[in-house]
Length: 251
Image (cartoon, rainbow, N blue to C red; front, top):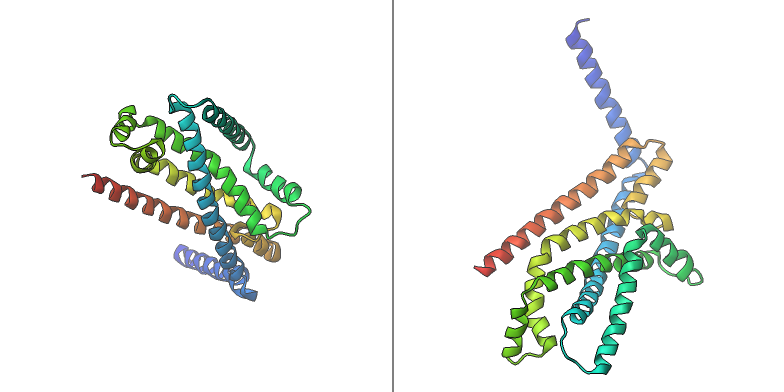
């Protein structure tokens, strides 16, 4: 028996073992459905959490930047703005200072402990609130980077502060912070992998269920990692296309 026949036999055994493992983990008992169903849950949670994060983040960013940039105003309006800014600061400090997993567990086991509620909703709220804190600081930084002359230009056109923010400042801010927002949403997608701690059958939990049934860890985990990697690559590509489109619209 020469070296080539030995190598051929090893390669044949490898592919045979690979085929057996693939059948055991994904084909037998239709275990691939755990990954497909889990992927659907992950995408749903991520999508709605992103929407909450954007809405909450822009709201907090506008409040904080208005507090920092606003000039003369009535004492009542200034008091309200100070209160809102204080609440926003507390929110940012608490959310950014504690792990997202702990927040998820608190929302599920404490806040909604006495209520029968869909686990997906809990995950959406938890990840949306968490993402909103980071989006808020990203957007606030973008707003604060806009030259003060842009605000003055809006006032010279007859816009009030809200109209200036909506028609002049926010569009420019969005273009400036788009790369950072894209990175935040990619991080959010991967953060949802801890949703299994509240027994939500997301993509990662689906792979873990397969592992618990087959006692084979490598292939389910590789499949989960490959799916996450593919989604991140697609999102990164879409982000670059959007950035290119926005740059071309400025010319």
